[in-house]
Figure 1 (cartoon, helix red, strand yellow):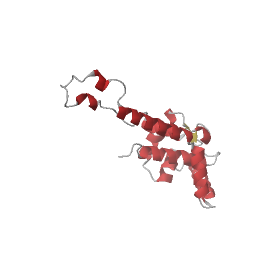
Figure 2 (cartoon, helix red, strand yellow):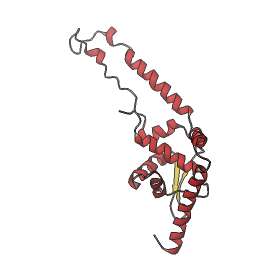
Figure 3 (cartoon, helix red, strand yellow):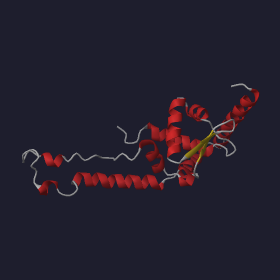
Figure 4 (tube, one colour):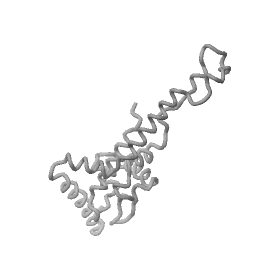
Length: 178
């Protein structure tokens, strides 16, 4: 089972898409959901989590939609993971060392259970290393990697898609078509 679920991946893609959307636009939850072919309810829940964490801001109305609340270089992958999944520990020590067959249940010698469990210490160290690595990687880093791999027309195609959606949303509101 993955430590970070699909929600973290979708959140990172959503933020990446917001970073690629033209600044004159504000993609709606529907736009973002349709761009990734996700259910609208899922996208709304994801955006709510990201908004609570201060990563996006939303506004209502014909010109409303979603924008990054911070610059891409100020949003780390750790920020996103914590926003979506919370600060769940990587490992939960069950203090199994206290239940050895060598002593009666509940009567483990102090020497066997004092201090941090050696296994737990390794897991705490691994979690700290993982969190450090995630904290060093930003949305801007990811966007740079995506841009380096993308075709020459990818950026303009994405920009055009969000611009067209935004313009279409505004036009349908002005004409009364919904």
